[in-house]
Length: 332
Image (cartoon, rainbow, N blue to C red):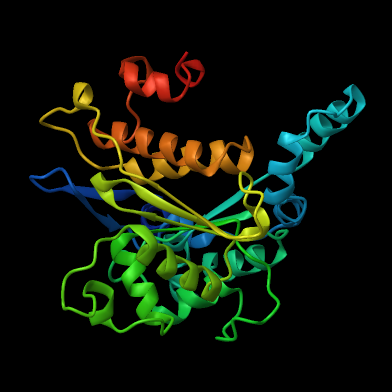
């Protein structure tokens, strides 16, 4: 009888452990349609729902380098050897850019989740311009209130409130429309039609004005809108624009790349957005390259991954055009 009870207790503990592991693993399922576009299913709760803030992480984020000073420092050719040595030591103890995604903030305190509150703390702790927010509105895992609070760093709608700004906020064309509605910037009809009732193209001065209004509302120094096969646009506020001597905001567009040598019948879009963002951050925020160069590289790398199967294609297979855009060094 005792042995039976011990066995039942052991099995019960084993089942509980397995259930816990399955509940908190970080797996998501990508469902690919016939056109290669992906929709995603997430385990709930998942590993990224349980992010917490310990002292080591808080210290690391608090020491993050401001993206504006990153650009200025990279353009300064007069640093002496001691400055470079000190800079290298600082890099070992800090990071330049802190990237967060809205999917991790999807649950609030439900299911014991802590990520939403953790990201809010980190967003407000990090130095101005050091945080990048990647917006991913995956139904049903988002609410207007939760996303706007994270983006603005507060639950108030006062755009004049002194809060730390993001270094970069990235959305796609559908998310642009949703966020405009949420921020009360335009009505749904105005997003798609001009005064004559014609559909607006997502480009040019009209897009620049829309992006500037949204950037001000969501407290970000830069706003990027991705447009799938049609490339992307990047708006930069005046004080951090690194290639314009005028005290004005800047607007940059790239029509996108279709690297035909890489496109296959079983290609999909999984990872294309992440590849785009990684290239943009590395080129512009970390290396201090101009917005136009960074946008070109981001569109090229995103287009390359979209033409491959899976999110991490081999660099050795990269076509010559992509190598040319990156100067060869990134793929050597």
